[in-house]
Length: 92
Image (tube, rainbow, N blue to C red; front, side):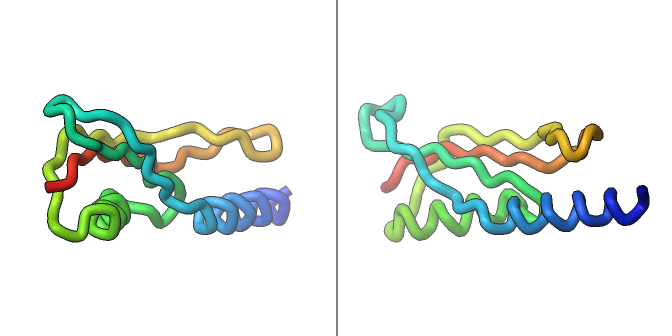
């Protein structure tokens, strides 16, 4: 039983570490192009969102919205909690 839990946790960590941060484009409140992104999974912090924002907007950005929380993930009949961070930006 203990080995099953350890295997499940390792699988979850592996899958979440491979997830890419994919910014989604939309029109922001000022009418300019904006991006929203989710940085979820074990080991991901809001800093990962800020890093991606810098890549998307090399000349700087304005934060429109940000949120952090926890998401529940089912694993082998149990539930694990993983951090989830969201960031919305407009490029300068």
